Image (cartoon, rainbow, N blue to C red; front, side, top):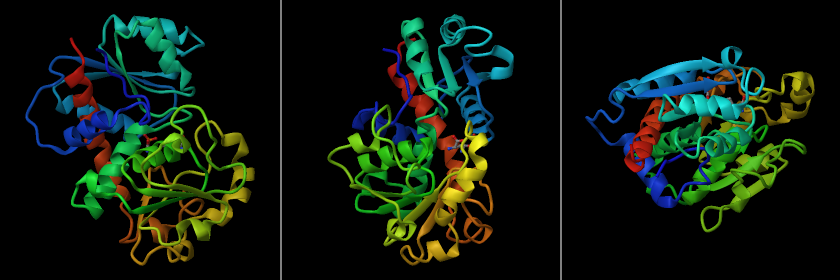
Length: 308
Ligand code: CP
Ligand code: NVA
């Protein structure tokens, strides 16, 4: 069966466990020996492209990069025809897309012949969430993701694609999640990767007060105020989100010694200040490190379950 990794929500507990295990266990295999992975990016990237490329290479494979400028997804030709074409030459395609629906369209068009990996869409950033979980576990539970239950993670700012995948992943591990965002920027219920649908794990609380959101938090997380595609709203977003800036004063309202995460790129002085991002409480560079671990986990999990 062809495996896909497009949201955290779609994965069983068993799948997730395997991904976390594959991400961190030592290995000496050539899972992707001689195989190509197509990387399609409709939006810019540094960490995701770097971690995907290096993980594929480490597993013995190679990547081919396609920018939207070159292939024109749904402009030069349809997403379906792009999928059909790539599936003649690649068994795996990792994509950063504007519209999450592209994944189901390509799955249908290729009759599930090619595994898809979501490298960020409008609603989810699941490889980032795997890296975030690995980072939090490394700090709080000696790397054991099954021992995170009861921790409190507060997210402040615009509730983005990153927030959705992060919250789903943490709630599934029994972590309590609070999302502090102003009206109009809070989590939207429904659609794919919906944290409100996770049951039986941690608790999800939403708040329009940044101070309330971070109270007693072990971890405080933030992301850009202006996600890719929202550039026209930059000034309005700055005005609306300023009270949610992660600065020293806000961090001091969390638990003493609370750790800070940010998926990057950071907009220093907007959603986060230098003295927080560059402080000893910041885990952002471990997050970056774990982007590669996360990709290794996802790729190995896909190959483990996919018949060639
Ligand atoms: N965090 C993240 O996905 O970074 P890039 O957009 O640079 O890939
Ligand atoms: N929410 C951000 C994440 C960037 C990694 C965006 O979509 O632009």
